[in-house]
Length: 440
Image (cartoon, rainbow, N blue to C red; front, side, top):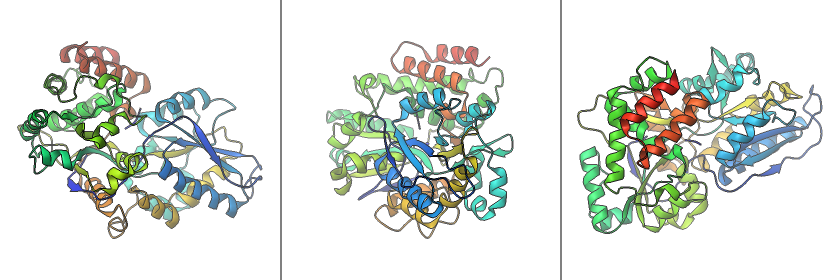
């Protein structure tokens, strides 16, 4: 699972972060011995598969191996299989030395099991590295005051991506700024026989994004914080129920078509709908741009991709500039690594290096690094990078994706129940009651 919001802009070539495409594969860096002062062990880094991002990651590994006479190797996985692989391996002799994670509850489960090495001391010894990160993002890799993960990828707000040609054909001049305007756009798109929204409904995390934004716009971020805090009745709050009713209104209006439950994101099913013009838009994290550039480069080169904020909901208590998504993704070090020192050294020397930061921006990532205002607008993806960076920088709140903020068991129950609401197997009220019971 995976998975965050925006302003308004368009692209002539774009890309940003964290897709997931085929099955597990890997690449290796050179070298056969450990870093200076290390055990000489081979080190292994696990991350998600994403062609453009993986090239930047591999370049960092190559630099580290050459500079430290080390042997660090990278293996990549697609999203959902990676979660399962990590859970079954992290406490075993087959655990990676450095592993990709989402921070929040996703990371906390491994910290609670004493499977992650703390990084606070290393960051204190390298203040330039610590101070380079946006503090609000570094906080997501912090558990009980101790840092266990450092940002290793771009900020990942969730926003709408749309096909400008289809919008023009439907007579929609600008992306809707309010929910009333949005539903009018849905009707206009259906009138020209275009599915309004592409949805990879075979994966619950793609549907979660709607609930996240509806609750944020209707009730503000405090409603979800009450859920995270385990406050009694938080799941049964009227704003939660109303959010799920709005989900059903979209489904019943035909906004997602009729076959969304069989569409998969990992095989580019929803992206194919968007790029072919069979669907007009998709709600997705900023990694959508990278994925489209990797898988549908002609679409990107044609300048057909647009992006925009999730609309404001009239009468809602939430700030329409607030966003949801993944503040970033993180690298953490296994406490069982044969060479914790070398693994930590990789993070301290590479994650804020000029080469790594520039490399990420060149593939459409906006690193969680302070002071990039003058740099993000440069290069092929400057327009989109600026949009994403300013959105995160200026947002009054940035709510972490719920499936990463909540404990894994509760998160999985939530995703299953969300799919049931989308598929008409559970009512909004039943969803609220079921989640309240699961949270006890």
